Length: 373
Image (cartoon, rainbow, N blue to C red):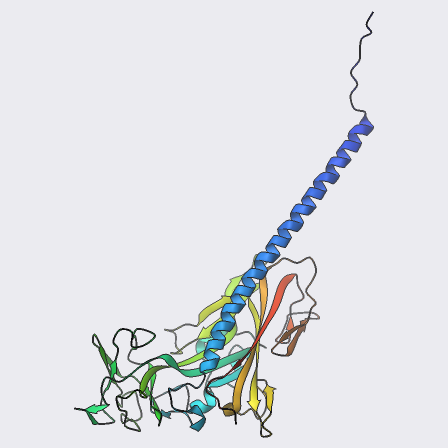
């Protein structure tokens, strides 16, 4: 006779063991997922930071190489004659490359990277960081369609007629009245302010009247030969500033700005890349012993005309806190240590002791237009 079989369930102890094992397994899965998520966030952030830093340093390097450019006229013999009223330089040989330590948003040492007052738009500059100013004629230049004169006869106060045919320059012609420009040949150069522009299909007529210049007469005769070029005058200031945005925890987001001419409310600074926390620079200066020494922008006795190279360091920072431990590392920016702040807010020589991820990027660029003796 068959005996009945009784089904047996799990005991309380077995259920508790199963629950514990399930919780342990879930915790492991969560830990793995969390680790993978953090690793993915870190990898993505690193990629973005590297891309932004590479773009910023490429732009800076391009302008540094051009510092002091004025066509085939050698900047080592002196800058152009300044005819333009209110020009942002009185001597291009001294202001082609310059810098400042930012004490406050409106107080820089020297007073301005341009040798004048701090541009009003730079009020969001971060104290303790450095500003870099670079001045040069644009590589997008235009030849003369005829001699500066009347009927082919040289006349220095006559309008400047440019050949703006398609393909004649690396950029289409787009200059306007009120802009600064350089006209030069291998003998000399003048910095003027354009008083009027009349643009045709292949020729642009440039006025340089007394209304915007101290003298409407150029200092030399400019003939329509291959050495004579006409180009926009660039004066760019780079600095780290507050973008006005904040991260999810309320921390201010900073970035690298570029201020171009004109320095007024109609032309606000351009945010090149966000996530730049600090910029430091040093100038490679040729001394009397013919050795190259590196000096900070506020160094006493810095001779701007002897600057041959510029070393730039950028400290990039993540927008949010993505690391498990506080950042206590020391970073080197252009040879200058940036340490973790011991307490309170960070300054120019320190960074916040937080859980944001940081990377330092450095480059040294030779100025093409400075001659090594």
